[in-house]
Image (cartoon, rainbow, N blue to C red; front, side, top):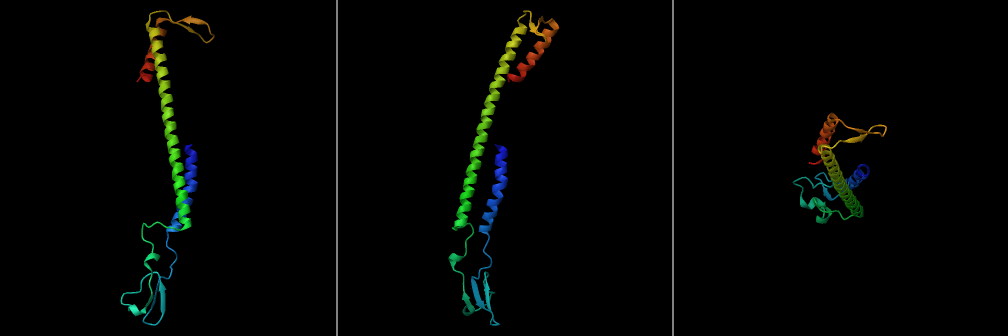
Length: 168
């Protein structure tokens, strides 16, 4: 699941960001200002005329609505589509994060149950070894053999280590 999210992120996000940046970049020098220089040449620019240009020589000014303000949302269809794709991608990422968190919680519950079972088994084994009765085990061939006191002590040490590890 994590690999799928990474692949989606690596493939979709750069394309979406590129599209969003392309929409946010200013259009190539649209002639918003038009004025006549002292030499009589008509100038077009997206920048205002130099200071000192007489008002009668300024032929066109940008309208207040033609200049996008910083932070103003774009209303173009392409920008809306990109925003919609970004929202959908964010929702997918949130759903994947939620699924991953649920999987982690489930895994933690399973591990806790397994640890509890190991703890109980180790405690039962320790009780048998501490009971003072003779302990019988099956050897590699399936033949029952009785453990001597050294083997019982070794098994008890192993059972105690398991209790210490699993019963925290």
